[in-house]
Each structure stands twice: as C-alpha cells, then as structure tokens.
Length: 113
Length: 112
Image 1: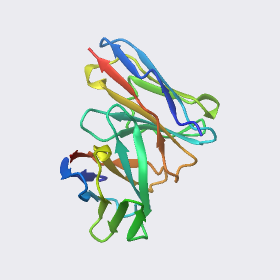
Image 2: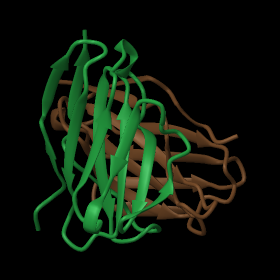
Image 3: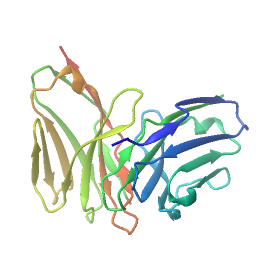
Image 4: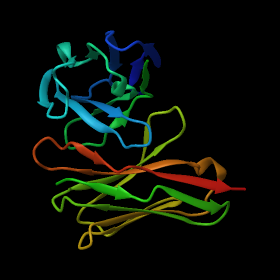
C-alpha cells in the first residue's frame, strides 16, 4: 500500500512570497490533516478535512494560510504572503476516518528568508 | 486546556531498556499514540493504546497507561542504535474532531 505522498520535499522562499504544498493521502482515507512542525516542537494541527469538508481549522492563520481538498482526495496548502516564522516542516497525514490512526507523509521543509 | 508533556532527552546504552514518559491532560482521550520520527522523515506510528487498557505489548515495545495520573510510558526492550530518534506521544481529543495533540518529543540517543 502506498503511503502519504507530499511535494515538494524542500522549499526556500523569501518573505512576502507565496508557496503551495501538495498532499496525496492513502487511497480510501476519508480524513486528511495538515500539521506545522516548528524545529524542536511537536506537530501542531493546522486544518482537518473529512472528505472535502473542513472539520477543524481553528489553528489555521486564515489571513495568510489557505487549504483545499477538492474531490475529497488530494489537498493543497498555500501560504500567501509568507513570514519568517512560517519556517517549519509541513506534514500531511491521513486516516481511514476520524477516530482511526493517522499515517504521515515525509513532510515539506519550508525555509523563509 | 489540552497539553502533552515529555522530557526532552534520554540517553541509554545499546542493549539496555529505554523508558520514555508522557503526561497528558485530557481525561476524555480515547486513544493514546506513540510515534517515532527519524531525521528528515515524517512520523511513523509505533503503537497505540485504548484508554480502557493498562498495558499493551508489541514485540520490543511495552506501553503502560496510568489513567488516574494521566501518565503514559513507552518501554523499548533491548534498545538498538537504530532506535535513536525522536519519540512523540499524542492524545486524541474527543471533542468531535478527534484531532491529535502531540507532545514536544523525546530525543532518544542510543550509545554503542
């Protein structure tokens, strides 16, 4: 079974630029999560989708971050404009449904200069 | 509020047992998880325990749950150099979304 795929793996941008990350979850997984992991910290949930609907986006900085999951499969997370403090690893995870264990992708390491 | 705490570092000798500890705050958590993260990689699910269990064993891994004290531990028997990584515990919050709250991670270093 293929795991969660993410791209790109690394991205370096200047502050105030825009960036987008892509995630392809495990086939058949209804729930998809985006996490932000700042160096030395545990992952923090940004947004959770159930199929193509948003379940929880309470910690998403909505003035600059946006995410979508069209057709309930792939998802993109966008930052516009980026700030220095957005430097982190962005992890995508999926699960069969909300109460099931989550499987993580390798993450995208973002550096904002 | 929701909070999960872990000690930051643990160093053990190869062949010894490692015990990584975690405390959590949400008494309504249904599942508690242990994940392993190697450098440059995502999180790998190691094991999980349902909140009505006290212990779960899976090969070299033993999870102990003290629900009264909200304390979770992961014991790794016969620790190997390949076990060197960061270990995260996570609790699920049953407020309807089942989102995970992760601890800060414990960096395990195994000395040869």
